[in-house]
Length: 136
Image (cartoon, rainbow, N blue to C red):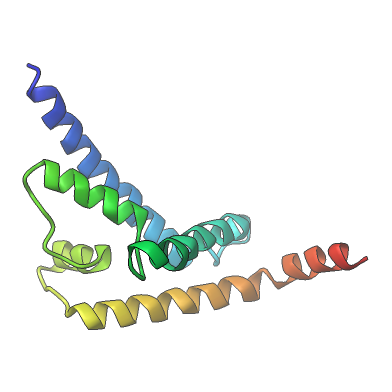
C-alpha cells in the first residue's frame, strides 16, 4: 500500500502536467484573441518570458519551470523524456513524429514572439492608459 500511493501520485502529477502545461501553452498562443482574457494573457506571456530568459540565465535559455517539474516526475516514474523541449514531446505524443530539436526551438521562439507582438498590439490601450497615469 505504501508503494502504491507514490506511484498513483506520480501518475496523477504526470497527467496534471500534460493537461496544465498544454493548456498554458495553448493559452499563450491564443489568449490575446478574446478581450476578456487579454490581461491574463499578458501575465502568462510575462511569466513565460521570465522563465525562458531570466531563469534561463542560470538554467539555460528557454528554461521552463513546468517542463523541468514534469521531467522530474517522469524520471521518478522510471519513464524519462528523451526530448529537449515540451513542444518536441507534445508533437511526438500527438503525431508520432519527432521534430528536429533546432526546428522545434526556432519555430517555438518565432510563434512565441509573434504572440507577444499580437498581445502588445491588442493591449495597446491598456499600455497607453498605464503610461499616461504614470507620466501625469
